[in-house]
Amino acid sequence: MSAWIQLVKKEFRLGIGMLYAVLGGTTVVTIFSFIASSIVGGVAYEQITMLALLLLFFHLFFLIIYLLNSLQKEKIHLWLHNPLPGYALLLAKMVAGVISMVISMTFSIFLLFIPVLLGGVNFSLEHGGISVFPEAITLFLSLFFNFSFQMMIVFLFFWVIYLFSQKYMSTGFSFILTMFLFFLSMFIYGQFTQTSFFSVLTNWGLISLENTTSWFNFSHSINEISITIEQTIPSFYMGRYVIEGFILIGLFLITSWTLDRKIEV
Image (cartoon, one colour):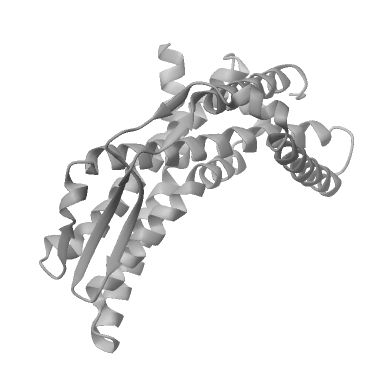
């Protein structure tokens, strides 16, 4: 276990350059936007909050970008000579990426509320949404991280396919083949989700979430941010998440096995 923790630390150090670049770039762009807006448009505080919201959206793709950066810096043959199994190597990169994403998201959320802290923008939350705000945030973050994890595992799966195909063809053809397989698999899976069999497979375990939310409604003006939370009773099928979870676990196991057995070191 200690060896794996050391590997996580090593992976975090490997990707910390990107984290610093994101934090530094975010700070520079925010300061520049604030100054420019103060001089030209007079809506500097609004500029900060809008930029912070865009940065939060960017974090949906943070893990993929982080892994791309980390894998490009990694000397693949030296990495695969590590005595730890493939799943441990992949998990170390994934955990390091998640830690970096949480740090970056926290910084972006802080930027979002800087105008409020400085007193330049009034923040109001509709009375009906106050009681469900924690549940709404929890639901939002759960969906956010779920989507990010899905993309991360799918990316690793096709990255291994790309490495494997390089044993038999050039880099360019390997990339084209990998992209073709990606879009083909997404199309087939999309068609599969529309079938009655998929509905039977996933439409079980209905869960209704009382006293929670379905969406946020942001109201923005130059000197005020208002958030309205629509109170509904959203529901979802637990079966959908269980089946998708099994699919993701299967993809991860296949990725790990291929990395151990089929990628030449």
